[in-house]
Image (cartoon, rainbow, N blue to C red):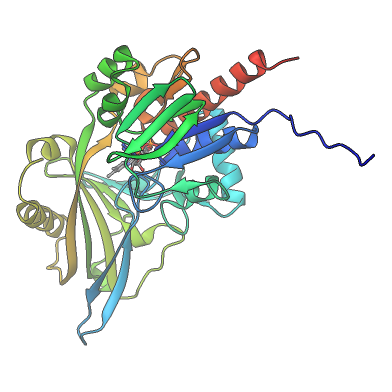
Length: 357
Ligand SMILES: Cc1cc2nc3c(=O)[nH]c(=O)nc-3n(C[C@H](O)[C@H](O)[C@H](O)COP(=O)(O)OP(=O)(O)OC[C@H]3O[C@@H](n4cnc5c(N)ncnc54)[C@H](O)[C@@H]3O)c2cc1C
């Protein structure tokens, strides 16, 4: 008799993750490593979420198009918790993150940062891209309906079915967007998400001349007065190319100014931020390129750090539904990572407890 092969091996638990920012990517990686069959959906063209890079080009004096890249989301981040420090140091060894100790100008007082910041290299989404490598990611797919049917979860995008029969769903998107998907399953989570007032940020990306003598002696500046909250000398960060005679800037409007001017025409915002940067830098600037981007949901509010749910994520084992993201994990890049990992731990723990001996 020919040898028989077992065909009744249990199929892996399937998980659909909505959102491929750091929370979703960290969660997906940990679940995949633990044997879950994951599928990730993101509405953007690429992964990374608010760890974002804008590629553009401007026309040089001889009419030639010159490419430029701006990390117009998080320019860098800090690591505080032991687990996250271990993660970033491992990513540094893989060449995905570079340590940066910027010189900071705080309202005219210049000094070296006391804690290192971390810059993804070669671009901002690289960390998420690496976490998600080899995993099935469907980009350009906005999940706008989530239903529970007898054989599992169903996900839809613009009336089209994108996944069905899924065992678990992870919602890893900013709270206002998450609330819409969660409302009919966990109205309590949706209500809490709606109450989070995410902070917006108008962001300017610019290229100017930078004659060596006029260069500021800092990498980051935090002016005390509106409209600017933060100026990043973008090409001073590790892993970025500095072009002699030119400077690349990313300027974040302050929280209060961004809130007050959220609906202003982009051209007005651009003029205002250009003017403020020119004033801060002093000598007249030759502008080569300048554009703005409005982040409606840039940061979780500062209170999120204190008000993070103790578990750092939401998990409903009976429904097989979870939520993670910076607003649950305590704000910022670290909060997003901790939240995604915490949710993965919850799913893995439940799996261990319920699988047959
Ligand atoms: C201008 C700016 C500056 C910042 N500066 C810092 C800083 O200095 N330090 C710091 O620590 N943090 C900073 N942050 C915040 C940091 O970037 C975020 O906290 C973190 O990246 C959030 O990760 P996340 O995975 O929770 O969410 P996100 O990165 O927002 O990821 C969510 C993903 O879900 C996708 N999505 C949303 N809705 C749907 C849907 N319905 N269907 C499918 N996909 C969907 C989005 O496209 C996105 O890719 C900054 C952010 C901005 C914008």
